[in-house]
Length: 82
Image 1 (cartoon, rainbow, N blue to C red):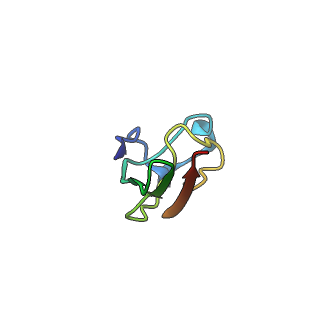
Image 2: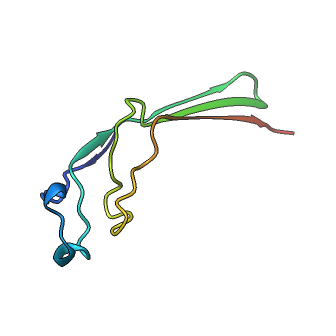
């Protein structure tokens, strides 16, 4: 789980006077990780970031653009040792 308490600013009351301040509401994001060694040489890994598809601004991320963070993202990896 990733949690940010926000900074208490109201994003709807944004003005040019506070443009240099990073503003974001609070958020909780849940990530899931799984790894399974099928053999001593073969590993399969799955990662789901933002499992609940929460819309949020990255804390202390892009101050001026207020870019949204990525939504639900599934990644996988296959590892083979030789």
